Amino acid sequence: MHRDTLKQLAGRLARREASSVEMTRYFLARIARLGAALNAFITIDEEKSLAQARAADQRIARGEMAPLTGIPIAHKDLFCAKGWRTTAGSKILGNFVSPYDAHVIERFNEDGAVLLGKANMDEFAMGSSNESSYFGPVKNPWDLGAVPGGSSGGSAAAVAARIAPAATGTDTGGSIRQPASFVGVSGLRPTYGRVSRYGIVAFASSLDQAGALGKTAEDLAIVLKTMAGFDARDSTSAERPVEDYPAMLGSGVKGLRIGVPREYFNKDLAPDVAAPIRAAIDEYAKLGARVVEVSLPNQHLSVPAYYVIAPAEASSNLSRYDGVRYGHRAAEYTDLNDMYRRTRAQGFGAEARRRILVGTYVLSHGYYDAYYLQAQKIRRLVANDFAAAFRECDLIMGPAAPSVAYDLGAKSQDAVQMYLDDLYTIPINLAGLPGLSIPCGFGAKGRPVGLQIVGNYFDEGRMLAAAHAYQQATDWHTRIPPGFEKE
Amino acid sequence: MLSQEQVARIAELARLELTPAELAAVREQLNAILAMIDEMKAVDTTGIEPMSHPQSAMQRLRDDNATEPDLRDAFQAIAPAIEDGLYLVPKVIE
Image (cartoon, rainbow over all chains, first blue to last red; front, side, top):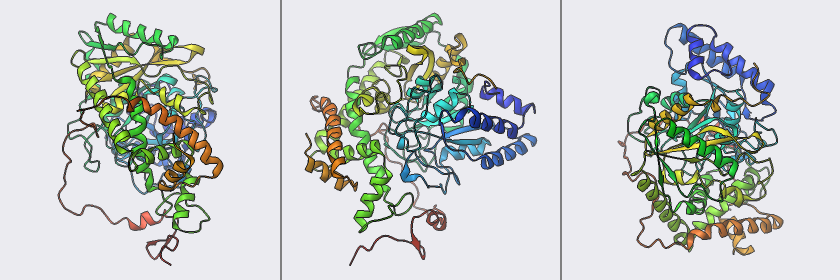
């Protein structure tokens, strides 16, 4: 059952080969048996999950199945779910039990999906290795000594180890695509505005977007169709109809123009990653796509601009954690200001603190123009580069990360180096474009490599169809890490 | 380069307590991050319109109707300190 796609799981439920309760118990048992070594989950609540599964079974008995009815899905612990502890990977929300559901959670509930557990993540989604979580690092199922990537590392590891059929994630600077690449699963960050941000703990509001991690492009298409849609409670939610992504999967890649940015293959890209990426693009040419060279000349400015914009928005968003209305409050203090200072110093980890301080500085009087305004202008240049490239091609392809997963602890002491590693994912967030990563081979030490596919605004259907065509022709997406293959 | 005093001032603005030992370490880290950001500061962006957001569309307005249900009790159930429906904080005015 753990090898099944979402469609196959739904088939089992429809044919009554398995009940949702049995399916949920099966994955909970896998989490208990195999998951401990990965630390992929922050909260598991069997009773709550099984109650949803029983309700799903009744719904199935009534013949009212939706695509995800009865199927257990893991959610990044950034999505508020009513009655579930929702921590954002932080001590400051360590005791926060959400009184309401995020829009995304509502959508899964309407479908009758089962909440399998809350997945571990970098604190407030700030990190690229999942080492900044207050609840400890997540391990890469391919090598327990390696990072799974971040910030949606728990979601990615859970899908890779087949202890969750699919999972949600969020992607502010690469937090779905990079971990998907590091653990060898498929991960999609939709266009900014495609999925409502309502009820998702905010990091950087002009960059945050929710998406999904799954075994196949088909699974992503199914999950995105459920997640996406207009929501009046998110002022940036896109008012446009959701396409039938699963129905578009078969459109193929014949005649498709694939743009390969000439800036992508340089000294920053490890040779063991470059080779599988080139082979994947060759595969697309074999399938009938036309490969053209494009240019993104300002892409090298993306990381510096991002590390002004994201911390600026984060420092503003995280000012709400004051120990007054919810979350951690310091036990001892002398006055109100002291309570704020101690509560926040105790509640935030090192990376969150760094970003709050950088953001506070770049927004402070006298520095705003040189940093924040300049970063917004660079953001325009980066977006313009993509607009020009998409006049010459339909999709852009390249790596999702410059290397395969690295060892735990290898970069945790050097924040700047870890930031610079996000050079292939961050430009997409600045522009607000959709991007996905699919497994396309293995690099050094047998660690997975992901191919990034970037589409134009709201072109998720075409991206997923291209990913699906590749997965029909190759079998990288079916590889399971040793130790996690068996029932 | 940020001085020790500047970092202390930023921490004060951000309401983050930093011990003297943390202050030195944080200063070093912030200066490394700002040095990386400097690459961007040198670019000539004369005449480029700042992009604050991926969507250039106008802000959507809703009808002026009360739509929020009363969830005070649910929200206060998770508060660190309340009394008679009020959030408690240390005394502000002596």
